[in-house]
Image (cartoon, rainbow, N blue to C red; front, side, top):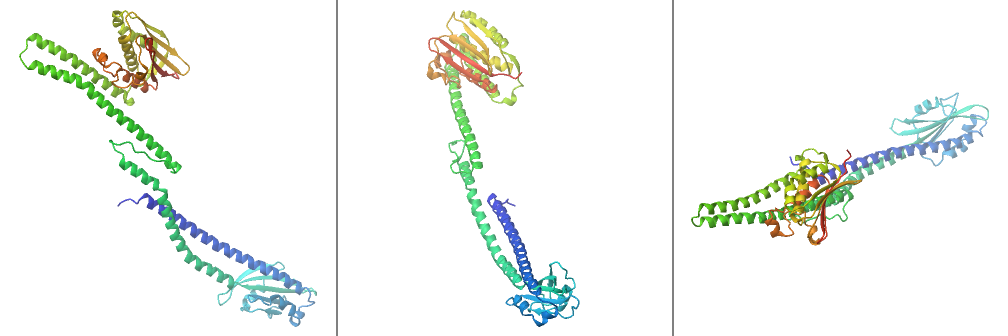
Length: 466
């Protein structure tokens, strides 16, 4: 079974909640109206009872109520739903006065008269015809000291008619309201989910060949705008990664094409006619040099791939930078002696990292420094332990690097002097490896150079808590 759409589920949810709220409000309104009508009836009976008590206080004896009822009859005149009944407390068989046509069941009146007290009390009754009455009763003292039981009953027919009318109108209005709520909920949900359709539209247009599409965050809800910014940031990274991969593939193809063409050309020329054994040896030696160059490129590429996968790197350990710098300097001591270059390691610092990778980064920088340092000049490896960073700088005097090249030095296969670097056996990946290693160590790789004076490459490591 196909799952329901998000808009349908949200619309149904809002509709159901709205329906429950409307029904709940209708029920609460019914009970509130019932309570208010009952309160109004009680207040009306209480006020009328005060008037009757005042009138009875003027009678000297119970017998006068029969002979002079006009004052009491005036109290209930004009109230069709009101019934006044007065009994002698000692003789409840026949009422002293009965006015109004509301209460028609004498048994109910007699039963109510038997429970009358000095305190005003209320009771609800239903006669044989099913009509409901609210009765207020109280004992009233006359001038001669006798007590009269006063019953005031109000017919609830008007209240029942009002409640019935409310129920009928509610039963008609509620379905219409539910339909209106459902339509409104659907419209609100459709409008609220409109940004998601923009998400779907952009997602359908994004491909490996075209990552330029972005989500607009203008007039978008805050929750979705944050998601859109996150997706845009992800697309920016993917676009940058794809462009770098494309550029890297082009650079790699360009770098491998030269040695492969050289190998093919030499092989084809050699095989074009018979050669002597010495000529074959010379060609094989030349091919071996080209193959070694290809092997170095592949080895560097494999190392870059390893550095790009932090999960595959062994846990970091505490490294003493001057010890690693001295080890690397010792490896290059023979090459330095041939050019009468002195290698000086100064300073102290400890960082968390991978020992072999840090040696590889220092080695690449020192190799470049030896390649470009004039004969007889010193190369300094300076270690500085600051408050937030431990740095290792490799500086050498020489021709220096022009400013337009500095920002590209750590790019893969970038060379300031392409022909000279290839002739010296450079693959163009050394500084790119250095930057990847420093990125893995959450550090930085920087370069400063003044043409004709000094070039300084600096590795910055974050200070370890240990």
